[in-house]
Image 1 (spheres, rainbow, N blue to C red):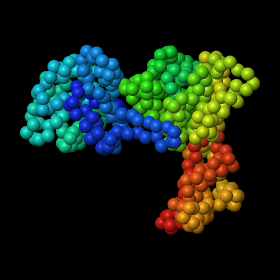
Image 2: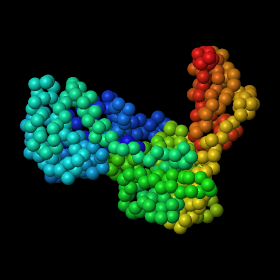
Image 3: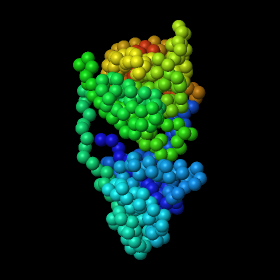
Image 4: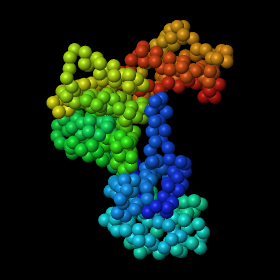
Length: 443
């Protein structure tokens, strides 16, 4: 079941951002640790009583905006109203109902069933009675709170999870290979989905951002069930600072989270962009299998060097996933589309592969003999052996005398040597370094 989206809307200066921070219990920040990639989004994943939802902050709504900033804020709020599963209409409990509150109420009226009115700034018990004045807005009894002081925030969260607690959707079956098709807007994700499925299951449009939610389709291929998840594309931050970006990013993250294989689609006529790097980084950090699909290959003028040049450009820009296979396709002409399904099966099989401990210990003896670990402190460091306790993702534990003296560079060296020796094409592998003291604790 996907995470619901809860949007905070209201006029300026009613405490929307304060409420956002209070519900998140931290300042909003989603940071990408991959070198050279930054991320800054105004949304957070909130957990309450075992339920999770995405919370979105919006700017203050003004009616009849004239300047570009006010128009952008209004656009953001209107998207929140249409896209969110629940809307928190925030008003100022210390101020009587204003004309702007009434105007916003009329804007929200067609979405009455998903609006929860929140009377903020009720800092004392005596002030709570004033909140009932906002019942004239037509959204029922308000939740009276103080975001600054944290009063009745738990009650508000109870109401939120109650309102978004919809029936469970179909469970994902264990024998399915779950594949998220992700990428920027207008790279051909929906067209690819339709071609693979063989019918028009997703709306195809040349306008970026047509797909606002995920669309699942199942196909059988060589005796395997593949669940294909089409996702909304990520928009460039400079193009749309608010609004569509929030929702498309969240839908894409959700789809990656519930997938096992990520098909990253890149437009051949545009090349790798910052948004492509962000998607790839998120997928890799969450140990997803990755396939890179360069679409619109039919639009490129080619000679005998073109493919190699494109491969080098992609590997330079996405060096942190240089293990991902690259496929050149055209969703328009059906070029090599079946090869995508072949690669999905191959990568899935790779992610389930186990390496015997005897082979891993032979591997350790060779790579350590070639380049033994060292530390600037001069402390003696020794790796005893390696084992693979898990698959999907393949996980390798290196047992050491003291793991904290295994440097970041040496960890990367062992990780790269593992991949060079055992390949794992398209598979993000996990390496863990465990100290002898930890080994004793485990016993």
